[in-house]
Length: 195
Image 1 (cartoon, rainbow, N blue to C red):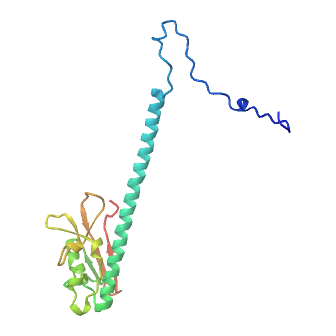
Image 2: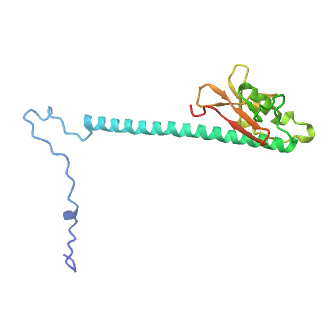
Image 3: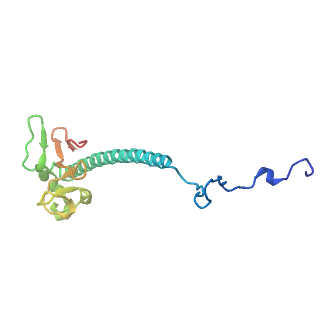
């Protein structure tokens, strides 16, 4: 005991560690194995099952996040293409519709591979020398090569149709362009982008 009645007997607080006691064996001591600490088969199986469940949850959420990211990336690309069309209209005083004629409602709707005729004039190399303005960031856009494989637009030349992929190794789809000549607006859409 010390001064204020505290007991400083540490052995009472921290009892000495004792090893595993050996059970008495009726046979010779050599035939009785020492008990060993370790995990049982049930404990190991339980850990494996829990890890498998957690892995499934993580993989499912990662697939969902990838799908949402692809959809958002396609939506942003559509807005970028719309901005490029509006900038072209502002600089040249006309839409890049070429030989397309507006329908009775004043709309020019271009689908499939024909979108190359709309987006082609937006490319820097097709601009007159005094008007070389980059309307598109071609490194983020894709087209198809001669073997119908996706390739970045900046790796090609000339008029190329723009495509987007909904997921890896899926069918490529073309952007659809809708220009309202009367209202002076443009809209770019990616049909079936959620598939």
